[in-house]
Image (cartoon, rainbow, N blue to C red; front, top):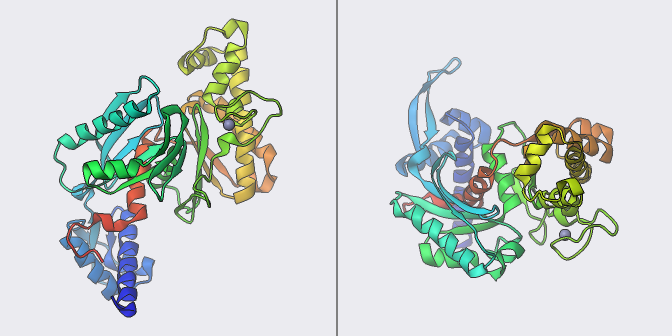
Length: 392
Ligand SMILES: [Zn+2]
């Protein structure tokens, strides 16, 4: 292909992605409005839209009002024109769902994880996907996976997921071979961040920090509407940032990581060190005692919240991102815990920066991870949506 032709194709693809993104972001929108928002010419927009119409991705849904001129035809995404699969491997059970282009979950399959056995864990992933694929979804375009641990997204490799006993596992390759679909793998906290960004609270803004506070702790960072993964792919891995001298042993092998103070395992262990709570083995039991007003449980939970808040203050002080969403198992402790997080965050960064920062609990719980991993497929490459060979 000549250089000019290649450039032309790239421009075409760029324009198409821009138009698609704009349609994704609106319930309905006219061609003129797309042109205004994207600053593309009306002719370009019309050309792109007719391609999208013939692909069945977009439909005309009626007339909108127009000031002065004649009413314009409104366009809307056809939510069920394509399906994606999102998988969450970061819980005590594996969950996979088929979702449409608006993030509506169509079908979900779960598998409890029994033993920590890497090979069995892969079989469980297959079982979930086999089950989901049994129904012959028309136009299934890809599989996104949110997995715990260190992930090399570009290579599609789980570098290290201790709990699943996966090391250098080429998961994307394995799934692509088996299912003949594009596969993307993301760290679960990063996937959760994308889920909240795309489908959660739709407040304006291109930057977002999502902190996933479960047994482990991690964050996902979006900057200018894109996932920020850092140079090595592990941006947001705040759970293993050192916090306490001679602290508790962490599952990473070191002592005093944030996770050993602020995560679910941490508060369970802290509770078990007290004679009155030595028999508590699950977060559910701690939650009950917390809401019953048990003062020691309350102190343990709020202390965990304060440690988390200090770490978030560090992120806010570094990045000045004004929207922070909390997700994960620890959010079960609700308002009091959130207040502890917020209070500590306020003390950990400049007043002005923190005052302007909104911190809240997300609404998507475990779904954020699987929705985000499926949405990442598109953010990564809109071309997946095109079934006809007009792929540029
Ligand atoms: Zn650690």
